Length: 281
Image (cartoon, rainbow, N blue to C red; front, side, top):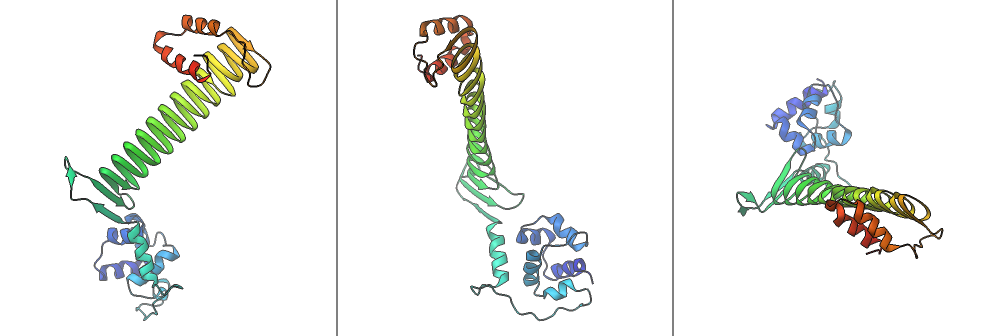
């Protein structure tokens, strides 16, 4: 008998489905199907767990010449815990669900659902995939969202998106991150209508390297109105002191007058934020 045939036989003898076995081992049902069809082979740790579950030896599973189950010595780790207990305690951790009895509008107040392919949905949702008012997960969607990939009104994660987006990569109306994109954007690399960062690109840009359309302020600045410490290029107004981080003496009234005349009224609130950041207003 092949390994796949033995696995299928042992599973049926235990009266468990492929899906139930998959949940116990933390794999997909398709993986179980492939193992039983001898298309693919399980990893060693999965074989050990199955030998414990099916009460058979590894020799029985792996050697086609052995067709009858053998008595086996139950394996233990250094702390005396059986391998079976260790395997399935780990699987339970990654296949855990809790749903509060109390609900709001038919939605549970708290839903914790940790497992492959499972989604937690609740006012407070916690899982690998989660959807809730407060949502925590690898893939997280919610009003307040925290996770590897977070999407929400407030999104905080490695990739944070939302009205307020914060993360290594951030996208939002107000965004802050190593790489940040938004209407108002703060980051090492920042792109936005009003942008502030080491490398800053926007209509109004503030940073070491600042590339703006209307206004740029930084060490190296380029814009309609450009204020630069070591380099500045402005189409209407340029102020260049040649002194690092010193902008003392530029004509504040002239800068404001030019911007007021050229910036559309819909963007003037962002202009005022940029001017406030650099201390002109």
